[in-house]
Amino acid sequence: MHDLIPATRTLLLAVSLATLGAVTPAATRADPAASEATVRPTTKKLTHHLEAHQTYPATRTQLLAACNDLVEFSAAEKAWLAHHLPEGTYASASEVLKAVDRR
Image 1 (cartoon, rainbow, N blue to C red):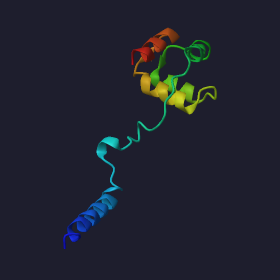
Image 2: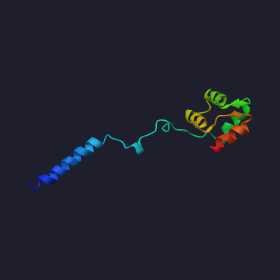
Image 3: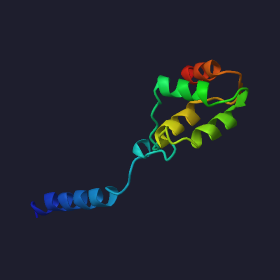
Image 4: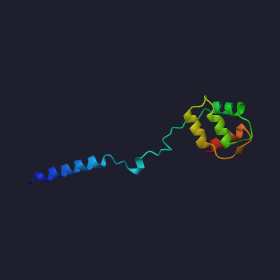
């Protein structure tokens, strides 16, 4: 009888851990929006595109549409720009660069 209590506790603990093992605490669950990796494009590459290939004034929507058509930017770089470029109309490349650097 004395050995039965520790064995029962061990069994209950094992069953509990096996059952709860599939449960992921909310704090550790990945946010689907945050799981997409973003990478800041180099300042040189971003500046070159904004100065050489973009017409101004340009809205955020126009800037992102122009960026999405480019193969020189990776998907992660495009995602970074979309996350860091605030809504607005920009008169120059320098305004765009200032806006993304503020975020």
